Amino acid sequence: MARRSVDVPALVESARAGSPRAVARLISLVEDGHDALRDVMAALAPHAGRAWVIGLTGSPGVGKSTTTTALVGAFRQRGLRVGVLAVDPSSPFSGGALLGDRVRMQDHALDPEVYIRSMASRGHLGGLSFTTPQAIRVLDAAGCDVVLVETVGVGQSEVEVAGLADTSVVLLAPGMGDGIQAAKAGILEIGDVFVVNKADRDGADATVRDLRHMISLGDRTEPGLWRPPVVKTVAAERIGVDEVMEALDKHRAFLEESGELRRRRERRAVDEIESIALAALRSRFARVEGHEGVAALAREVLAGRLDPYAAADRLVEHVGA
Ligand SMILES: Nc1nc2c(ncn2[C@@H]2O[C@H](COP(=O)(O)OP(=O)(O)OP(=O)(O)O)[C@@H](O)[C@H]2O)c(=O)[nH]1
Ligand SMILES: [Mg+2]
Image (tube, rainbow, N blue to C red; front, side):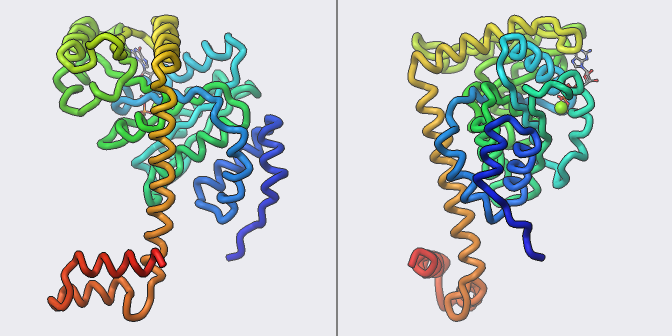
């Protein structure tokens, strides 16, 4: 099927002028891995790099969308333009599992200065790490001052989303994640701000205490390092939102003063370049034909005529040529 041709300069111009339809179309191109992406990214590059990217992650149902909605409201009060990406790393379908997010974020549905989008990683090569940074760049170049990225915490996704964000917020709820569970899941290292939501339920203070204790045992207590604050909220009632904003502002100031912002963004660019390069190489593996085809090499390895290292060398030589 022939793909609809894309007028990239016009689309980028409309997106920059604030057209939600143009932004939506650009993000769809990202999701689809459209051929025009290369041109899109080239056109966006000079306009990106301004947005503050805040990741929110945590177990299903912990209150990420409710908190995101509250934060959108707080940033809007400051007159800022806000983008929201709800990324579901487990769902192959866009808009299905995350429909609830759209419903819950209805508060802002009619605000032209707020752009909300659900995205699925659709089993892309590189998944989250491939599509999300590009979608962030679209929102950034379209003039969003803040981009909030909500990701359900399953497996590696927390760590991935932390890699994408300037500031990572990890949400927990009483009974769902005491300090020990958090440590086991590896989230103590990735959180810049911890939020214990559903503080209207029993056990919130104990969870806060546990978390603070675990953080104090970590290696992030030295002077000059960021010590992640733990904030208690009842997001459903907008309680504690000011404190979360204060923690976010402090982290932002730390990022700038310490040079960590630049370091994080460089690391993010490295990851992005590598994942694009790897995807390009993989697609060339598939196209290598004849004698050097990867399937042919596999048969050589199985037959014992070639070892896997030598086979890999031949593949690399071939695609690098
Ligand atoms: N009791 C209580 N319920 C809350 C609080 N915050 C959110 N909820 C409720 O918890 C449920 C899940 O909230 P969401 O904000 O959708 O949680 P989520 O983490 O985005 O969920 P997924 O995206 O499905 O992983 C909703 O019914 C909320 O109304 C809170 O502070 N206290
Ligand atoms: Mg949600």
